[in-house]
Length: 465
Picture (cartoon, rainbow, N blue to C red):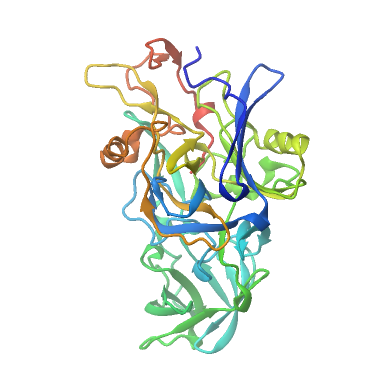
């Protein structure tokens, strides 16, 4: 049965400062299903884009005075069970305020911002670095490239799914993937653990001659030729290039992203075999909540969310190909890439001093004591995230603070209470879609007490972070 969230959005447009627009409308498919489209768009000359990148996920309620809109961004380390977490939650390439904070270990598309304008490129995990004044070639440790040195980072982790009687499944860290591979004694290389410095370079704090270094303890781990490593003193490292990016002309912000909208076969994209995102293909030909960033043929930049609800027979979201087809039929695009979808996708705007949130507003609520069913509910804060896009007018500053939240979302105090209590699983995560442990029960109930279909493996098997 439909729940109250399985409804087409009322078509409309919200205009913000400096020409920002949020267009909302439903899109119906021939099979009777639909998605709600939320399209945040602007003319590049009228606005500035930036990214807020934090080492740990934070609430979307943290906003800056001058920010007209913000959206969730790219993939990150998302674990339910792990002995530790990495120093940076975002995966692979991370550049913030012109400083390199994370290096890619695999070739991947990336979204970047230069002088307030969004764009994308395919970034190879290879380039040059300087170690103690000597230039060496480097390659990502998950590539097959020969190089003088190889880079390790949180993109090396492996995430597995384990059945759980309480939540249905858990995302678990393969603990061995926290460490660099052990090398034989005859190997003439050492692993060096570096910490990022304020000047954009890296300084060593540990050396492991035979490997086995804990990737989570450092900002960067590089396997280097032993003759260039100072085992007893400090080692200084500077990145000279990352694929097409040069150290003397880095963008202001950059993060690895999902597949380009021009990808001919989304299922064949290497991201579907990325162990850091789990064992289920993220861009399989399944309907799910999807989010894309693109430059339109209307000369405007777009961040667009295609909404849905896991388990719904009428409002399931879109496939990657449907995403591209809808955009092509609407206005077309010159460039574009998928970003993190699923339970992470969200758009928020500030209108007349009130924070409003759009998309991805339904979550499974755990049963109360004595109940044997789950409830679908709307939970405004959503999942905490470590990267987001922030949009401002030209020249406006960003200074983090919490905004008041209007009646559209409910009182701020209530939201903070929800955010503060328990783990993210207690705020029930739609992709995990916890199954109740009692066997044979095939229905859940919506907030009005009517049954709604239990999420299936197909619904849960999207693998978004």
